Length: 88
Image (cartoon, rainbow, N blue to C red; front, side):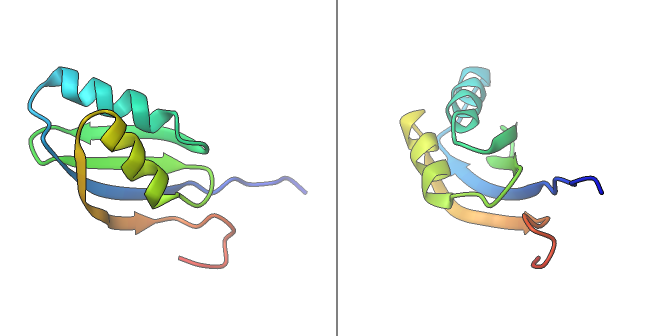
């Protein structure tokens, strides 16, 4: 029997980003959050989609965004996937 890893994603709204450097800063900081496997930042909308191998710690993601110099204004906008296959 092989173990399967389910990816959990959540989309946050971040304010204050205005350029590619902002995108890089947010990506770099959020990538440091334990369990995070991907970060996709849409500069035009301020949406930051985070993928992880398990449950996402919204507080840690918000702290990482703040460390980069920006603010999470809604957390999370969307959430999909399951860390254990029993919830949604």
